[in-house]
Image 1 (cartoon, rainbow, N blue to C red):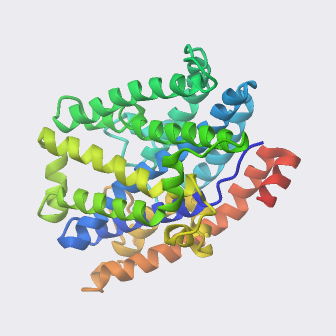
Image 2 (image 1 turned 90 degrees about the vertical axis):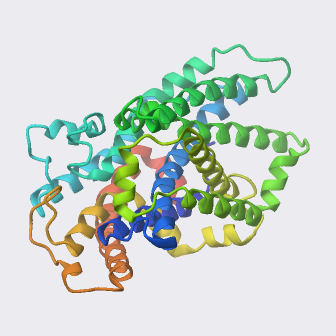
Length: 406
């Protein structure tokens, strides 16, 4: 039976709010400016990593559980069917609506097939057009396509001795491929390969691999507990120490903020196009992994063990934002631009509210509240009107009953 991890909705909720804050700070010119601007900059990038870790964990865990139990691999047809119904309808509708008004660039161009086919990430000319945030969907879709094949191939890796020999057979390939992905990130930081390559599955897979490794660990711990064996000490420590984990995450966040280049958004743009020192690039990768793992672990182990992080993740409004996070993610940037700038030549050309022409000082806080409200309202319409019906349909009658019970 597929296990439901209840706190993951709130993880998504916090992550999408971090992405939203990142874009609002960019719109107001506060990104990377001062301590708060530096934190916003870090949170935006780390939130995307958290989304990738969550995908790796939740989507790979059924494959690992099946292998550990000695049962057949989950149906590839069912997996693809559910993935298509989960992401395609809402994305196509939102892209079309925003292509009509306020008129995002690309939706109805000759390159329309790139935007509707989740391929915009593979071209420098299209990656930030259409819905710019959808570059991550291109990475996710590639991950969906490769995951069943990965599970099939890893099952054929020779297992070590003992009842848990499958554990090493799972983790070793993940470590090898993740190391290759990190190497690509370092090469991109040194301008040896393009940033575009690093932003595809080639460079981003290590974050999925981190989630997949957590899925392997989760299945290992669950099987031991079900067999009446002692819970591994590290898993018990994670269950009891959720507060300490998030404290470690905060320290990693501050470390990443210290690496943010000066001069606000201009410094960020300069850093993207310049060669980054190797020690700084390595530190960024290590701290990013520590932050993502520290943030996600309390939802993986001991979700009923209490602690401040889990109480925060159980907060109903954050959980709802996480439930509708996909639609919020797709709506928020275009709506934020429309409210703030009224006109953005790089993305759309309609005349909007132009908030930043009239509000000074507190514009970031005001824009953040307005964008959260607007994106949440739009997301409620597409979640309940499009996402939820298609999710129910993809799971069938029994799946709908199980999902509603969870």
